[in-house]
Structures are given as structure tokens and as C-alpha cells.
Length: 392
Image (cartoon, rainbow, N blue to C red; front, side, top):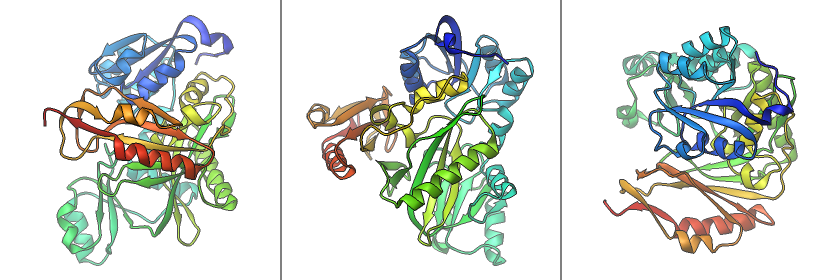
């Protein structure tokens, strides 16, 4: 393993490798641009959002062993912007002395939602009850045998993200929604609010958490629509949420970021929903509202540099910019000029050429004197801005 120091951020030969060239790769590249380091990215097309913010874009498949292995041999530290990468190659690179964050063995647990749930149970961490079932027939049999009761949530164990691979089954009339995949099944939790805490850790053991945020989800797309910081919950709940998030980071013992998504139940319990070992949608607001962005913090953590302050500079509301329903084709941002006139609004457009219904095309962060003021401004943008396609 390499021993990094502050000289690493002012060394033109130092190479940070990122598996994935999407919007998270783009924002990692933008954060690193303030330092004198090289950012290398691996993904299938340089036309992806990260293609314009890196020193060297390598076209390849991050799920392919040879592509990942050969890419990793060329960099000084290797990280990810998506979980679903070839971990066999990462394990081999780690054996050969390449610094890989997060740990590939822990990544194997996290990217399988079933193993993730088992990990929480084994570690005594608070989470909902669950079952692991093989396929749709297994699920229907469990219902028939009264081993599974409505309502419940089905999550594909592998490859789910951004609301994909999740089905809410409220009654027998929803059985047609059950996916025929290996699944993690849990009861539909009686949720009061959904919270998230992004935690950072470096190899020296320094750990810092960003302020707890509150998330509101789009009713159709099952994607975060609004993110509020600070959360409206009590100081007691915030302390409990951050304590649980810190324990999860300690249990996984990884370096970099860990976004911990949490349920606050109507009984006041904090339950772990799931985690992501990378920059995450629940931390995008930090670019504009905190002393250190989550992207800079991730880079500092994987290079074992001192972590930055996670203090909030100003209240904020983040709004995801989603592709409008009914439009597929070359993206056109209707109402963008009018939206830019609104005070406190910061635009982050990812540069995806093609829009699709509910595809994440960017986000805005609105800063203001209070969350309430920022939310009013965000709602003005939501009314004005639509991502459509003139081809549809």
C-alpha cells in the first residue's frame, strides 16, 4: 500500500483511478481539478459526464476482469463511483499492492442487498426483519404458506440502483409486480421520515460525518426528489442517526465515503435501510452548502489526507432534475434561463445527451437563510424547469 502525504495533491504524476464515468465521476473530477493530480476514469464511452473532467479516459467495461485489472495497474489509488464493478480484479490488484478503496471484500457485501442485511444482523446493528428468497415462485410460495405477509418490499439482491430493482407489494393485486430475481424481502416499514448521514474515514482512522439530511421521494420514480439540510427532526434523533451511521462505518472498516440511508419509524426507531460506499445523491448539496464537499472529502479519505470540515455553511435544499415523463431523446432544458434568475439557486447539469422519463439529468442546490426559504425557491425551479426532448 502507498503511504500518501500532502505532497500527493501537488504532484502531477499522481494518478487517482475511478471506475465509472457518470455524474459522480464528473463531480469527483471537478473536485480534484483544484489539486495538481491526474484523474483517470474507466467506462464504456468518453461521451459520459465524467469524460470532460478527467486527465485520461480509458474506454472499457468496469464489470470486465481484464479491463479493471489493466486499468488498476496504471494508477496509484483506485476507487469507484458505482458498486457494480468486477471485484475479483480489485482483490487481485489489492494483493499486488495497489491501494483500492473501498475494500473489495466489503464491496462484495455491500453490492448484494441480501449480504448487506445479513451483515447488519450479525453486527447487531438496527435494521428491519428480512427474508432472502430465490425467485418469484419462492416469494409466492412464502405468501401461500403464510410465511410472508402483505405489505412488503422486494429488493433485487444485485444490480439495483436509483429506485430500480425495488417493488412495493401492498396486496395480492400487486403480485404481478414481483420480480423473478434473487431477492431480499422486508416488511413495509411504518416510516415517519427517511434520513441519511454521509460518513468519511481515512486510513489513519480519522472519521467525520456530514450533517443529517432528510429526504423526500418522488411518488412514481422512487427517487429522491427533495433533500433538506438541516433535517427537521429533533437533536435527539439527529444524534441517534449520526451514532448509528458512525457504527456502520466502524463495522465495515472501509476508507472513503459511506452514505448511510436510514428510516425513522413512527415509533422513533432508527433503522438502517442500505448504504453506498462512495459519493451519493444524499451528499450533493455539500458542494454549495458545506465547508468541504463530499467529493473532496472522498478524495482526501482515499489518499489518507486530513479530512475537511463537515460543518454546514448555510441551510440548503437539493432538488434532483429528472427527465420529464413521456420524453425520450436528445435533452432540452426548458425554462433553464428563467430558473437561473432565482436567488440562491446553484445548477449542476450532468451533461447526459439523452433524456428518459425520470432519468437523473442533474441537480440544483438552493441555499438560503432557512430550509423553508430555500424550499420555496426550489419549488419555483421545479415549476419552471422541465427536461424534455424536441424529438419526442
